[in-house]
Length: 388
Image (cartoon, rainbow, N blue to C red; front, side, top):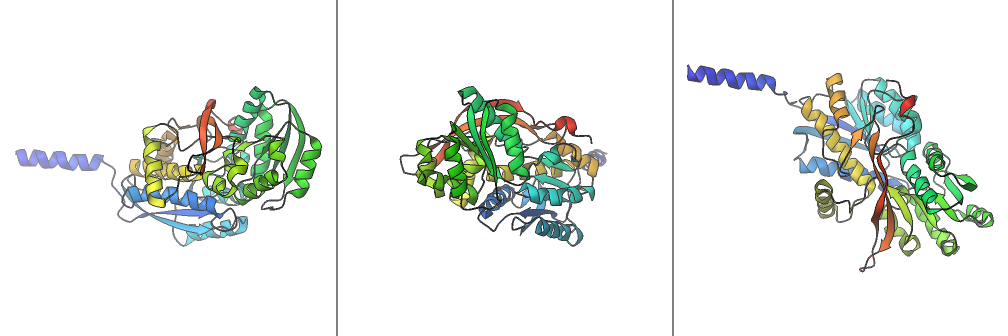
């Protein structure tokens, strides 16, 4: 009788627990691994892969297979990769896109096909607002957010004549819109450069002539490297202080730029020195695995992996359980390297944003040091436009 009761109890407990998938869950990563911005995709991939490796090939206790391909920063190529993942590989979860123009070409079609897309980077305003979707989540930020924080910071510091510069693509426009949302002073100039541009001589000449008291710019990856170097070569860094979002001052970019970036303030939702247990462990593990300090892109890839893992765990590894998987993603039941983290109604983060300063260490290397918090529990400006 005791054996029968015990067997019944065991059977009941097994029925109550989620049944784990027997085959690995495929996750499709479309990201930028070539061009001078290719290291951004590498960081996202490496942060994501670290989470998988730490789980012994699993996320949330569920075996996963990560498929990775390079979009070359080209929207059409991103669409081709996504289509292949869905039709050939049966992917139900996608991630990885770096650039907003690629995201706008890929994401809307993906999520309409009952595939979940979890963005570890690109967060265009359209996808946060009028084109939001129940199957789209962004674990990084909405494009405007870090620029909004810098607008607030420069407003507080009393700058009243700021020159603005960004690439002419969706994220560039979002960045400058976000900055102006909180900065109320005079705009000395607002210039949009070509995406992927490498020579900024003409822009620097116009900037000098405008005589601003500060410059806010958004130029990620290789664009930022070239601009900061040329800015210093023109001795403008001795005359007009530079400010920007973290995208133009990530750890790998600083290694390439060096002294030209020292003293520059930038805004970010994350830094390697944020003092919480999950972040300390992540930074140590990333350094041990890859031999370098992670960038914010790596932290976003890592958080995206753990968010997906939390939903896989809750649904027994079955993203096909659409409503349950979505609910699990919305709960954000994972330990973020940022500390406190939650989603707003449009599936974009509600989070703290900090100001950092570029410093030179005693060993001659360069890094960002967190100086203080600009926003607490900051949500994006487009949430009221979202109707799911």
